[in-house]
Image (tube, rainbow, N blue to C red):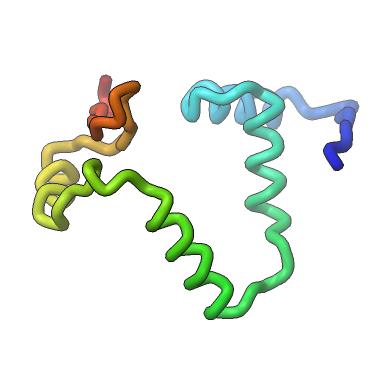
Length: 99
């Protein structure tokens, strides 16, 4: 069940950093705050077997036609391409960090 939280007396500097991070990640301020809280307060540790099962489930949910070879990924990194996205046609595209 989702709950609401109101933050009061948030320091201006902290608010500014949160706002910058939200813009950088293209998230709403609320979503950025949730992501930050999730990272700062991780759930209880899970076993290696549970983590591997999560990875396998994620891997099987990805479209196979969007796969890149490790060599292609390394080449994209060297060229400064950092953000992977799937287009509306489920074709993999990369956006430059500078774009």
